[in-house]
Length: 81
Image (tube, rainbow, N blue to C red; front, top):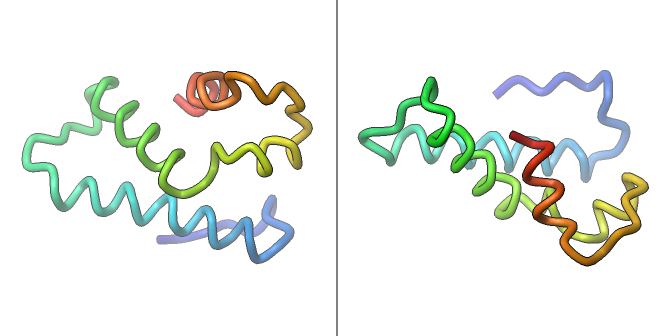
């Protein structure tokens, strides 16, 4: 995993990105029929990584300036696809 530090300012952000990418690596190793060119497969992995890495946690959303708490995960998932 290569992490570009141009946009990461604190260690917590680096940790979150590494966890997110490790989840993708896990999916790649464990799913025998995973096809990264299939949008549905890719979206599923992105949603899993977003949830399991804490990327969609409400505190992280507040730090990004998203103040709408209700339904924040659904909006976040749409933008991450």
